[in-house]
Length: 148
Image 1: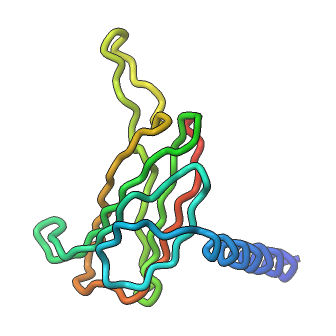
Image 2: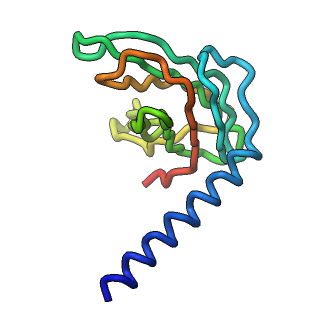
């Protein structure tokens, strides 16, 4: 019984890896990339990556690196995205949901859903703690995320 569960998990992971690789080949790289690393892109059609940069910085007063990514909702509906940045050779990853929080309505005082409206653009920054050298190879994945 345990062996069949392990086999099922390995098969699912293998299929996800193959599917992820296929979408990586189809995604277009943004024009404004300021990073010396070789970057593999995988994005959904609803988003356009407008900019990408990697830099040396500090995080909690210690040396670190950070990634800044600009995203634009190019669909005709409000969308929320999930960003994953994989440092391939370092076995690390960072990312999160974009936008992180909903905006407060000035009239009602209630928070709205965390979404980017059609045509709206945003920049987010992700620090990587305990890493001081810029990576040689990255994989950037931008998927759709439910807005709650």
